[in-house]
Amino acid sequence: MYEQMPALNLPAFDTKVTSRDGKLVIFDPIRRKYVALTPEEWVRQHFIQYLISCRAYPSDLLANEINLQLHGTTKRCDSIVYDTCLAPLMILEYKAPHVTIKREVFDQISRYNAALRVKYLTVSNGLTHYCCMIDYASSSYRFLSDIPFYSELSRLS
Image (tube, rainbow, N blue to C red; front, side):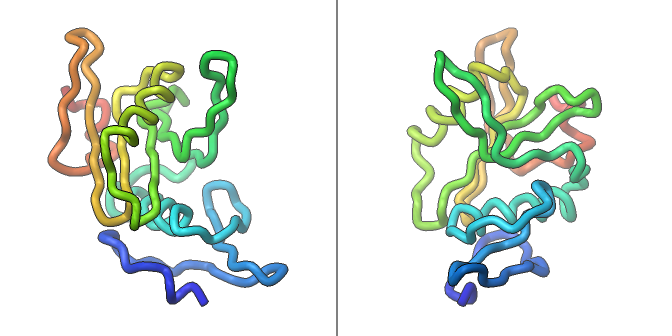
């Protein structure tokens, strides 16, 4: 059963996990459907709930599994946060808890950002979370000490 999923460094929430065709699935309230329960999906659902319940991100400004075109190929962002004008504001990349977050993960999310040019990149394996803010004017970035509240996203500089 899903009790075998690892404990995360995120608040617990009331998950909706069931079995379909012999496989575990978890309800994704953003996509409004059940999806395969993998370790990465476990992290995504916990992180999304954390953003909504602890950081006041509007659920209607979040999207999961968004396709984008990059150098003639289709890539898929794990999650995107939009601003109130529906412009992409943050890309989120999730890894399974056993995956160590290394430079390659940031290289991956940076490639996605070549197409979207968001202000924030966030990576989590459910145990460790990183958020960096991009300053395009100075071609630099800085890591934030915590995941910002949604209301802070437009004010941080």
